Length: 358
Image (cartoon, rainbow, N blue to C red; front, side):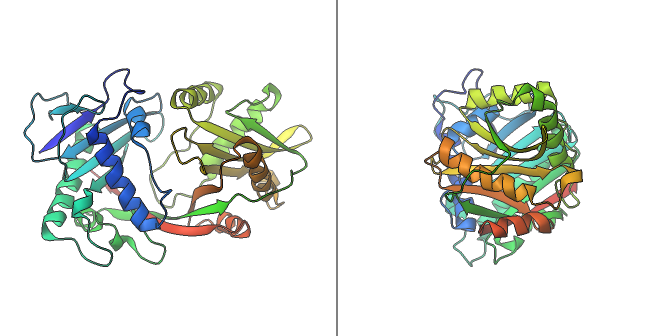
């Protein structure tokens, strides 16, 4: 049976329950086996915070178990707490669903995770019991998508760079339900190298952007979303406003996360932008490259490369413990792949995004 794992009100700083730790352990193990990188991981506290919801998204977590539990919640499933105290239960797998609230309001972003003891050894196929579990997870994820009022289900498959989607233990279950591939990316990291400062670059930690440059930054943030390569996925661009930036800043503070925005400024205008972020409970040697964009009229001048170079200088000064910056790049984006190649990026995994109208 499936149970819903919910975050009680005000539990963002509480102790994550064993059920949440089991989900994170299983998800991390799958990601680390695909990438061969122990930094490919999340944390129980970050998931607990996301289950609280925000103005941008609402997140749900469900577990598949043989244990009999009690009272049903609003979705008709038994409910247990994502924070301690919570019952100790064994799970065969989990379903993590994120619902965007501002854009893409027909979409459901789904992650199905198989329990670690059901994962096959590298190069081996799923056992029949494990395959049955993947099918149960995928079918229930679609049922929940419909119940939550969404019509487009999106899933991802992760695998080593020299493999394909069939490496992912959920692949057969998804394909049997007629999910179709819409997009492909590669995950990589850049070693933070000693880099001299770049003339004309400015750094704004935690969205501390000068008022006179704020409109330029909002324009570039929106442009980064509009021009991003997502293949045939059903996506909508994020429109950045002052209110949205203030809300993002508030989430940073509440989650003890940090960001560095690096802008290239020419004649008083921001013409290129790159951003790095890090979570308070993440590996202290790791950060994430979340976007890079150049104003359309200023492209092919090397401005993105200059922003990336100064970003490494900024990381060394603001986050001296960080050694690597991770990112995910669309395979169909030759310019960004070439930029990261010039920075000496190491590819650690590949992924495919699949979609189904439910």
